[in-house]
Image 1 (cartoon, rainbow, N blue to C red):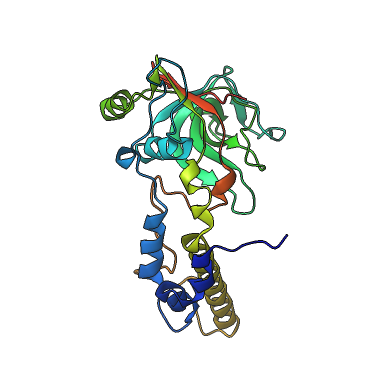
Image 2: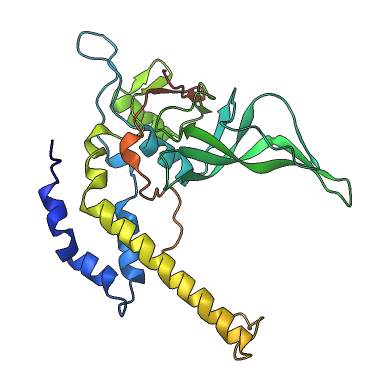
Length: 280
């Protein structure tokens, strides 16, 4: 059976933004920043459906996990994973030890894998104790990644919930939209169903083209620096001065396109701390 292609994709190469991306004489830094903004997720502009229908039956809200985790990431919220098992065997690092069984700490960033469907959160894990090899001084906290969605786009089975303390604004939003079920927010999808297909529309392909363009520019600049250094034209330790990068700036809570269409699962958020657990 022949496969159909969205009509909008047939004209993607004619889009002014794609033309600019492909023109290697153009500086695309401003365009990259604008395109990055298109991929941001704003919790407070969403209008999710209620968790319980008019007959009092639980149906689950359509507020997606990615949007809510973005809101938590922006404010570096402290979250708790009461139990967690990684997708891979843990690495034992010299001078570090674990205290307790729960993982907890402030969110440092969200991360994803552009070659797979995985998604997770990086926190400063306060269950890790580090010992300075020189002074013997102990300190709490070390960066750790925790997968929430596996490489196949399904819930990672190594966690059962996330606890967090909502702000007044977050609590009002979840209450006003009737997302709460008691003190629990049940999440059915990682990405809202309305975005499953649109992710692979023109914006997705233009974003991928932009990433490739920036990668090519970065490689060219690295190669030029190396060539000049080898020829003795450039210093290996140039004086520090203003930097202008070809990369868009990192922005808290912004997720880059990484095959979001399959990030759709069932999960739970709760409040007491509120909590999130994937419903397998």
